[in-house]
Image (cartoon, rainbow, N blue to C red; front, side, top):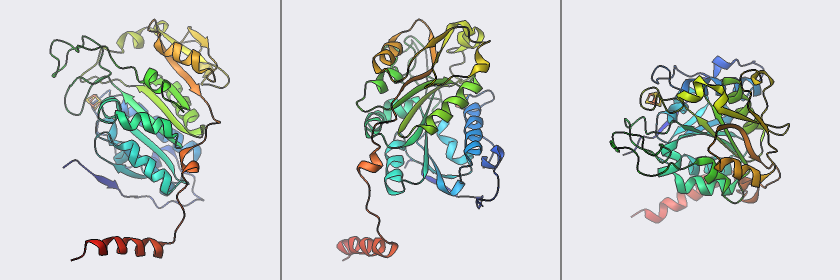
Length: 317
Ligand code: SF4
């Protein structure tokens, strides 16, 4: 049976108390030394503190994988679900409790393989949530198996002679879905950009898909190494409506002004392979969100119990 756990809230939130970033850390993260998940967790904690999100009104949902441990480490409500199913769980939460802030963490295998069907439809539903897809190009938790984003030719335990297919590009795929409303890419080794992208994703009213390029020193130590060592191989997409971090100007000389309202340019940029691109590819705040289109009628607790009992009665002998 797949693991299923509900993180219980340790912190009784008091709206008068100013919460610091470390107040959102439930317990230390247990990842390998140098894992990019640590950087993502730090950025998440900073965002929660900046927005003063109340732990009892915030939910982290995950599937299975190294990055799916997030609900155990973030001091909010959490749901560590089954493989590939984080998005339908999160969508259900948002439909039932639209006032909650919902975050989803998934790995590349969880999202683009087992959960691929949910990923496509959740993008189309456009429920308001922040989706952090931590892409280390491998299944790490199950010890080095080729995932859909593993580069062609890259050897793993399941493909010792190298991955036979070209890698699936999550940006291209998400930008191809009707009703996609927010698609961005960032990297764990550029913390200022990572944080600014998470902030933009949180501010966006709709399904914010953020692909985080994530270092996995255990199994794919070299896949991002050239870009880490040489910032000239990375181009930042900048625009007043996108993600622009002035302090990164010195480090990243390659900068491209890209208006994230332009879906055709976004798709064209996602297909180019000449450089690694970080930034906001597409954003449209005007699209309707699913929880408003499919609002669940409010019913009292008594009525819920009565309906449940009625259902149970059907199976009573
Ligand atoms: Fe991180 Fe890779 Fe270790 Fe998983 S296997 S914790 S992704 S470094």
